[in-house]
Structures are given as C-alpha cells and as structure tokens.
Image 1 (tube, rainbow, N blue to C red):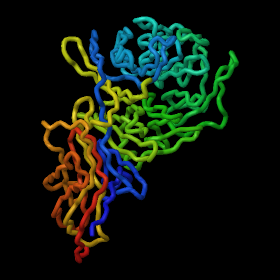
Image 2 (cartoon, one colour):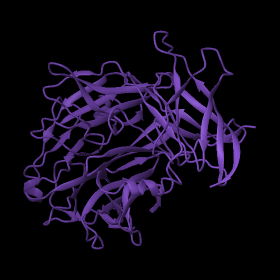
Image 3 (tube, rainbow, N blue to C red):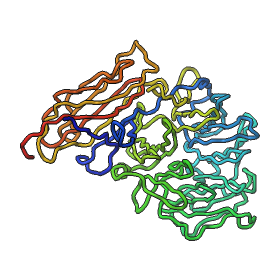
Image 4 (cartoon, rainbow, N blue to C red):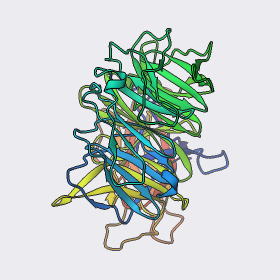
Length: 511
C-alpha cells in the first residue's frame, strides 16, 4: 500500500540532516484536508512582457535603485502611476495608457539607493549613499514638466549634513539624517507646510535613540524612527511650533538593517530587522512587531549588510520579497506568503530574482517591474516591465528552472526499500508549443541527507486532454537511514505537483 509523503515547504531548523527541505521557484500552497494533499507545489507566476517597454536613454540606467511606489501624479496628468528610480537618475512611470515613460532626473552622479517621498504635487528623491548635502543629489519632480529640479538645502541644514531616508506626513516632507552624520546625528528635519524645497533647520529627535539612524516610515498615521537596535513612534500635531510629538511608551527593541530593507504591505510593515543582536524578518503592526523568519533563515542572514524588501502578488496570493546581500557577494531572494506563513526562494539566472515587485494597475492587472535593464543596441535599453500571466510558465520570455528538495524520510530506524515513487500532477497547456520537447519531471535521490544524489531520472507530464496519468518512478533504491528527493522542472508551462506517493518495503535490520 502506498503512503503519502508531504511536500514540506521550507527550512525550519538549523540542522541540515533534520531539515534540509527547500523550494526554489515553487510555492508550497496549503489546501484543506479534503484535497488530494494538504500541501501542493505550484509553479511560480508567469510574467508576460508589456508592450511599449523599449526606451532610448542617453546613458545606461543600470538597475532599479528605489522601492516601487504608487503616485497619483500632479493634477491627474498621468493618472495612477507605478514608479521606480533607476541608478543613473531615471524616473520610470508605468501605467495602462502610456506604458513605460521615462524622465531623466538630470543627476550628476549615480543615484545608488534612492529613497522617495511624495504628496499629490511633488516627488522628493534622496540618494541615501551617505554623501554630504554639498555633494548628495536631492531632486524634486512635479509631473508637469519634462525636467526635475535639483534642490540645494546645504545652506539650510549645513553642508556636511547627510540624509538616509525620507517620508511625508501632515503636509510636511521629512528628512532623516544619516548614521555617519556626527553633527546632526539622529535628527529628523521637516519642511515648511506644503513646501518640498524649504527647510529652516527645524527637527525632532528622540533622546532614547542614541545609536545610528537607519530609516523612517509612516505607517497608519504614525511615524516610526528606526535606529540600528530599536524604534520610537511619533504622531503629527496641528501645532506650528511643535508639529511632531513622541508617543510615550511606544519604544520598541527592533532595529532596522537599512532604509531599503522595509516595505509596507496591506497596512503592515515588513522589514529586515535586528533584535538582541541577531538579524531576522519581522512584521510590524499597531506598534507590535512579530518575528516571521525561521531559524535557518536567520542563520543564513549572517554577514548580510544590505537588503531590499518589496511586495508582489501571485495567483491571488500576496507575498513579500526579501532580497538580502552579503558582504562576501552572495545574495538570495526569500519570499513570504502572507496568508500561509510559508517561505520559498525565487531566482532568475543569477542568485536573486530579477523582479522588484508588482502593483495593481487601473485596469486591475498586476504590473510587474523587473530589477534590470537589458542592452539592445546603440543607446536603446529594454526595461523589464510585464504583467502577471497565469497561462505561461516563463518570465519575460525566459524559462524558469524549478527545484524542490524534500526533508529526509525514514521509518523508525529500520531499513527501507523504496520500490516506487508516484506523482499526481497538473499542467496547463494553454500556450502549448508543439515544436518544444514534451515537458518532463526530473527526480534525483539521496541516501546521505542531500549531500550527494544519484543519477537523474525523468518522467513525462500528461498529454493534452489527459487527467489520469501518474508519473511513476520505479526501483528507487535501498536506504539504511533516510532518503531525500530532489524534484526539478525546466519547462514553459504552468504546473503543479499535487501529491507524492511512495511504496516502501521495510526491512528488519536496525540502524
């Protein structure tokens, strides 16, 4: 009699032998107990390229520099826009009518890590690289002209002032000083009312935060000031003399890794934070923070010095992406399912996923923005802009390699002869291409807890119109301790692994 093996989701512990499971470009999706399996593996979303994404630039825009944001624009000139800043100083607009529209901010230097705040009339773009105001580019853009305005506020705040993050609340723009700024350490400067260019040196600051600033965020009408190891909460006031007031008893012990390491999703703030000296993934809501990362993820965050957090949607499910970058050059994209709490990894041709997030457009479709630009010819570069498409299994025209490594399976210390492994699968041939090879599922088996694997075996998915095919792998092998499966696909069609069954013959020899 066959028994069901679970499609375990992601690493939970720190021991590889006890918990080696992971999903790369597969989502572990929970179902109710009446389904074929309480967990299935679903291929991650397809991304169809958007038309009108080719733009001609005077210089290479390189990679996305800011978090994506949704800006209504000035007077509805552009309508609702999904925006992002590219290194080199390019502001990219995406909407249903215009497609991709590019504005050159006129930056004299690369905007390596843009932070953005805005009201209806103005965008404020700050480069949080730590350069002083005398050299640090700060730009505003009103959506009415083809050019931006560089503002020099060094005379107002001091030439050596450094800005790490920005926000907008109560008709004022906020600028948080950088942690390297010894003169204005831990200050938050605020503008005149509805004036993006005028700062008279007025600021607020928490005396309880003595460690370097890391970022600022306005969440549900409250202002969170993050340092390296904690946060304080502030509210806006109608008083001209005291426009911002600290909320007593609201201090938290959660620090922030970097200004770009946070993103607001559905009224909650997700961030790469530090508590008790250790990095982890957290969610903050109503002044209470909660750890969401697993023990393995936190172990893997060792030497992470930079992070980028963004949101996206996949088949109606909301996710938070955590791009983490280590000092040794390694990087990874962890994805968190807000509903189920499950993690998986997404990656493109490199170590991380070449997507910066997705947002809902006016037409109700999710616009997906890529992290990179591609050189075409001359001075033409192609932006990665697309739409979520459930009928394809490719991203921006490229196939996606997918992999699942299961946890080790054993039978209470007795030997196992794995006679058969069978998969129930589902595949969508909406975009079937008869010129392509028939899609296959690959299987590798390990008897040493995933350290080495045997020869890869293949089985073909069902044909068009079939619903009853089982993918059977016979005579898997004999294992004294435990066995681990690695499941792989690299095909252009959306597919799911619904159930995994095994037929075992238990031996009598004890370990």
